[in-house]
Length: 426
Image 1 (cartoon, rainbow, N blue to C red):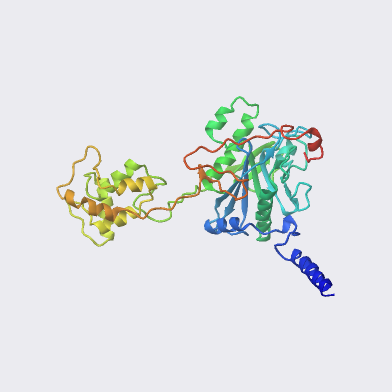
Image 2: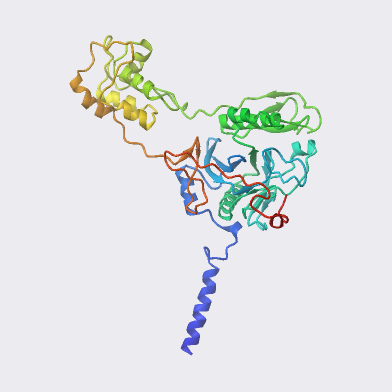
């Protein structure tokens, strides 16, 4: 009898455990964000419930998530590899062409599909107003899991879960819709020139305007459709109504979004995103009284007055504490900081040292005061876009000092048989 009770207890306990949070029967759409993603959000000063913005790049097979911060700008959170997308570079035109779409799309809560046959999905909203105005047809174009595509952007199941949860939390936080910009490639001048022979070159130039706006302002552009064309960053004069996509555009005025300047918040001695090593040495030499250039001498005078020291007319030689403080205020790269902290500090070419220059014997001690604390190594990046390892071996990672691996493009029929893709959405 005791054996029977023991087995009964184990059976009941097992059922309770499988029904607990974190158990194996939680539906994918209700899962929580993985711990490593939560840590990354916290590290970047982001919130799960804040609005998000998505960019997709076909040629690079990448999907980016950007999160909004309190200043209203969007900051890069993570780049996810696209497992499969079908067709070639270029927009979707008609039903059955197996093309993944390109353009500016909007996703609302009603387009989220927690019961997708492809694990989880959200509908891109194709055809949008531009597509309809130009007679393009098709439906059910998704970002989904299952790593198979017939006109969609397919992710691994693990990655679509994370992306889906980020979108779900943003909606629950109050975001009414999020934008998805789908591009053929990163819309640089070099890439556009490389594809100048394509029939879609003019269309891509319009997409580039939206790409450039976001790159400059870190805010999605305002998108309208009229005269069967995308019209970006336009304020329609005398009306707020949405223009007719097929009619001529009403009177409008183009606006220029305020560029994002991360180093413009407050006075600094040097306002630069990344100062070259030679320029850094020149400026620090000026602060140390090794340049006769009046414009750069004023930097030294400013630093000395801020520290309560009196600049000398003929010898702007700041004391080590003042010099250390001035250098610490300069946003340098680690390599430039190392060069600044070197014992041998040369004056700019063509300038003579001041008569009040400190003797050579004092140089090592002064350099020690200049040296700034070592900066922590940043996450691996490709350009300005962080590419983060997920621990599931399904994220793009690049070894330090090595070029990132070329993404694999999966076209329709390249990785799946006709039978396997026939039931997929198009």
